[in-house]
Image (cartoon, helix red, strand yellow):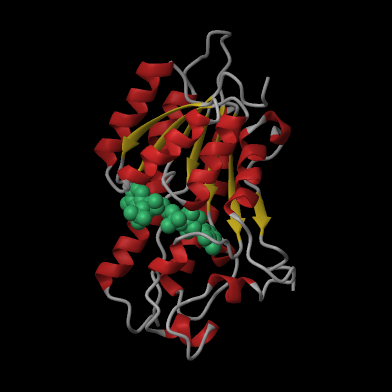
Length: 269
Ligand code: NAP
């Protein structure tokens, strides 16, 4: 029996990178995983990987910025399984560029995908987590994927840093609200360092970020940037997934409002 047998987990952005690795790791511990992503082929591939390994998962397309879809999908989870135990707010994008170059549309989109998504997910998941299970118990674990960029600033990443800092403090506020309600729901943030996922290929490399980390190169090289971590290399999505499983499980039952930093020492110096 796994640490999450009988639990139901909702993971956004699970068609790629950290979300996919987290979905796979949660399923390996026995959770039924509700995989969502704006990238349908990626999400379906994650489900296929989970099923191939003997786990249970289902996919639904989701743009995490749309409230009506959140309401619909949380209801779908309750109709299918009658419970929601874990929410991983993972879907995210990175907007790079000097703050003087970032357009208002880019800023608003960055906030919608990284911050509003967490607000909407938490808002709609809480009533489901507060629904009594067959044994009468209520509760759950909300895990928000922030970043080391939510702990400190980076040149060329003002919009992204602002979004991840907001996720960090929303997490703590929700943790306080749930603790006061005595509803058994914990809310924690995870702060990955440089992790080798496709997000790095999607960043705009024309501006200040490029100049700050890798002058003269045509594209951001995650291995080169990750080499700047004290351990000398980038992390893998599975390194973050291990932290997600820990926060989802009862092993972390006394943790709420906490920041789990998994960064190869990036923020320690
Ligand atoms: P990734 O491989 O690009 O995965 C992110 C997934 O989210 C993609 O499948 C993406 O789809 C999806 N997505 C984008 N916009 C969405 C939307 N509006 N609705 C639903 N899904 C959407 O990136 P990752 O590195 O695994 O990132 C996962 C999380 O970790 C993000 O919150 C990121 O900020 C955070 N993080 C990553 C690192 C790192 O070094 N990799 C470090 C710190 C924090 P598309 O491919 O179609 O855009």
